[in-house]
Amino acid sequence: MKILLLTHAFNSLTQRLHIELREKGHEVSVEFDINDATTIEAVGLFQPDLIVAPFLKRAIPEQVWKKQCCLIVHPGIKGDRGPSALDWAILQDQPSWGVTVLQANAEMDAGDIWATSQFPMRNASKASLYRNEITEAAVEAVLLTVERYQRGDYEPEPLDYHDPGTLGRLQPQMTQADRKIDWLKDNTETVMRKIRCADGFPGVLDSWNGREFYLYDARPEYSLSGAPGELIARSGNAVCRATLDGAVWIGHLREKQGKHPFKLPAVQVLGESAEPVPETAGGYQEIEYLEQGDVGYLCFPFYNGAMGTEQCNALRQAYIGARQRETRVIVLMGGADFWSNGLHLNLIEAAESPADESWANINAINDLAREIICTDSHVTVSALQGNAGAGGVFLARCSDYVWARSGVVLNPHYKDMGNLYGSEYWTYLLPKRVGAQQARQIIEARLPMGTREAKSLGLVDDFFATTQETFRTELNQRLKQLASATDFSAQLNRKREQRAADEAEKPLPAYREEELARMNLNFYGFDPSYHVARYNFVYKVPKSRTPITIARHRDKRRRANIQKVL
Ligand code: COA
Image 1 (cartoon, protein in one colour):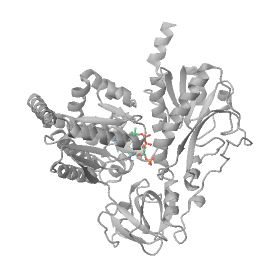
Image 2: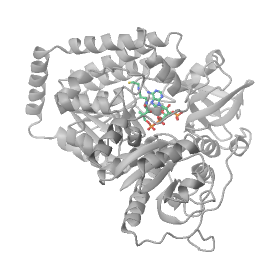
Image 3: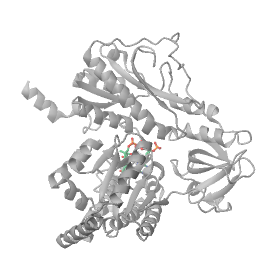
Image 4: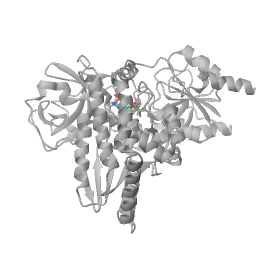
């Protein structure tokens, strides 16, 4: 079938549906919901059999839904309606939640129900639930709906609040007043829920010392305490604020009225105001090393997968430390939500010289990449629990093995960031794994890739399990096997020989030098595209049109070919 994904943005859920529907053999095109006229035009150009709306902020034009079946993916259980579905579910501490696929009609979220899928709730941020449980449930419900629609014999169920199975209700848009933290009355659990139900967007608005901030990236702390609401500690880039019965660490802040009104590490935003607060070592750790038998686990759950210069340097030190241990395998775990998204674009944007900071950041990430590539004492594994993008994908490929959770989405390309050339030794790693021609195709295609395709190309070596929990269980078993393999020494020897042969053919510094020469032009050259694209990304400037790479119906060359065939 021809399926049009009508969406506010090409976010992680839309990318995942794009992958899944194409894998099922459907022809998929994407249109951003910019205004009614563009949507109507897109429908006219593509003539879809079905329209699926995974992430919309406005109603679909009547002219479209009256003629064509339009399916809305609502992040709520049957009967739930309104724009703050998941926010309310977290704030109200619902034990389970779900996703419902319903047909668009004149009333928002009140159309006939095609499918619904449920999951148990987890103590996590809204963004984390969205990227994991909501995405998996949405894929299940959308694929079932598409199958039902294609079969042609399924009658969608009208919304009926008298049905005891309809537990959801119409809920209003959540306001800052609903989210407001009362530091004198709220305990740690309540504060955590209030922050999490707004993290990634919009954030809970809070104030301290006459300044207003949105709060993100919170972790509970039960061993510290103080006067409720006071800043009582600092750890790395996070600050700790006392609650009635403990405290919470806050890793990121956004100061709307500040010089840099986007998400940044809390200590950087607070500046001098955070200085008198005592440092608590290990209170909020961004990097953690654990050992189990012969396996060393390096976890680096950086917020949003962004890796700044300092973080890359700290991770490199931790990696070198892991390599000095008498283990056999090192596994790079990334974080639960993202493995890595490469350069820290927000920190770069906030730097005095974004060009210099970009240069420092790419060199720091390259230094880390080189250590992984040149490791001859251990077998290395990148374990992708969550998505990876741009430089993050190639950093993962530095390891001997890349194992991913099924359903992880990879974006192995840089060009969307203002034609960025990219580094991380990708010109060495990618052709070696996938061949020169495929390497070029992947980089140029600028499309998200699922684990099945990534494995068929050699970008990942294997994928398994769909939930975080089952992935980690199977991962541990596989790592144990890898570390105890009878041919372990032979494997290490082969790896050393291969590296030596590669080095003899073309030394690693030569790849780096060539890549950095191109990056230097991106950062310091006449063409400002990278700086403009980064600004737009960080400031979330809405897109004025859908990129041709995903809006297939707007690709003139493709349309001309179809007309020729007809
Ligand atoms: N630096 C800083 N923030 C980043 C980031 C980066 N490299 N990559 C993602 N983020 C942030 C986003 O701004 C967003 O912030 P929010 O919490 O305020 O909404 C959040 O992470 C999630 O990103 P989003 O784009 O919504 O996730 P996605 O899963 O839909 O898309 C990517 C994933 C990787 C396609 C997309 O985030 C991207 O293009 N990132 C930039 C990658 C890049 O060009 N890196 C630099 C070159 S190495």
